Length: 282
Image (cartoon, rainbow, N blue to C red; front, side, top):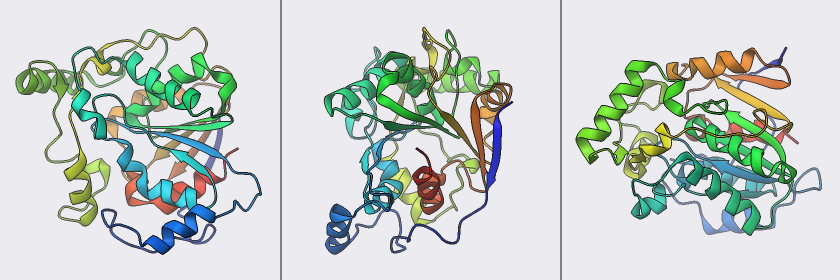
């Protein structure tokens, strides 16, 4: 059976960065402090953070700042056709493209002992990375994410109505190129309507390449390829489209399971909580 533990919202631990709306720039003095920070353990960890649907590497900024402030290395790339790479959107972008995006970051930056985190849709390509370069990885973190077996695509584990709706929206809006940004944002994301966090996210969301949903993930090894793996379950509220993935993980052995009392976008709404959790991994 999987190992279970519940993480309550933390009130102590890693010193918090100054509270500020997600969209505001940090002062230069704080950036300098982050650059010279030393990890409490004496050994810097390396994190690669993979975003979910419609997002880009920008969404990890609140968590990445905290990890860097603790003296660790962080890479938060955007997938091809999304975020700061939205200008590269085309119909040939598949799930294999996203796997390759992450592999290239890890190999070109010569990263080892990587804690690879995939949020939501980002859980799919991190499995592909583990299948290809397990020797580079220290830990896989499926952060409220989709988890696929070989031969499945994202819509294989979505409720049929949700999958059909996304395909129809992509067909209507972009002739099948990309899934448009949801409006309004899903309630399970956890943003208060009219809040600074909601506005910060809405300004940055981009369309999601449809073919990355419909092409299957191909694995030569079991999911995770023998690397330590943790599933982080956001409980307040749950995102319903992830239920099939959650149930599959619960049925497997060799997984760690963590519940956090936060919404699906906890990396934005609860960055301190998530940073402390990630800092505890090895």
